[in-house]
Length: 366
Image (cartoon, rainbow, N blue to C red; front, side, top):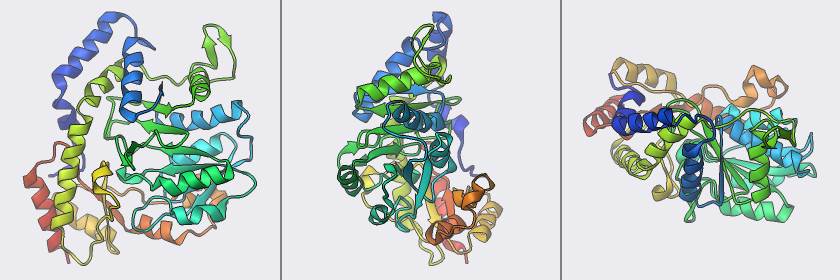
């Protein structure tokens, strides 16, 4: 069986270094907001080309705290609107509604699956305060038009980078292009912890300071609380694990690109729609997503051939029971995508033999 994702094999590559890092934390006696956390923040900020990085508990908190901080800074108010792609994972939208702001859904580009930048302006209203872009599947959104609109309408740009660690747009890393970026370190991400974790990147010192306080019970100084905050901190052991894995991230990304390139060159089946790549060198291939009108049948066929796949995602956010207020809305492109997408195995430990087997199976599908 070719698994969709073999996390044990991925982390086994670095087992000795991970154990050493873990032992170092245990021996230090400092398990929250210690040296590993501080050093990882510096290293990740350098990696993303930003001035600040603030470790938080998970990727959802990263996005939620960005919005919450803008509220505390009186830049956002309740019932303001944030534009967001309609086909994103629900976390992007949860971060908006959790702060009592209104998500305004915009259709994606059918070719890239990222927000259709040509449709954003029509959704901007007097209540719009931000555009949240989602660099879906590992491909950076085309940010030039987004930033032009943000400047024109005085909007903030929030980047959801949960699937795009290290991706570029116009020679800038995602997370450094907009006003703030939110990353997830969920174990299956390109840079995954051995638990949960997240981080916010920004060049805005006041925003960084506010997010750091909000995630620490609203406290900027021990036992003094500026805000009604929460507990959202990247723990010391996960920071140590991530410091090890960050050193290998670019190498791992190159391996993902090699597998993606093989898929793109060798999958040849009229029943399959391959990813459309605007800039192959900037894509980090968190997921390799194909489309088929017979998606469910294709998935079963691949499983019968001992190939694991996943669907990212089977139900669009506006059709989820959690957002019943949107259930009657129609977003045809998003709905088409959610009915047709299928993610193939791709990881830094996937070998050529398995990759060839996957291609051969897909090419034989009728």
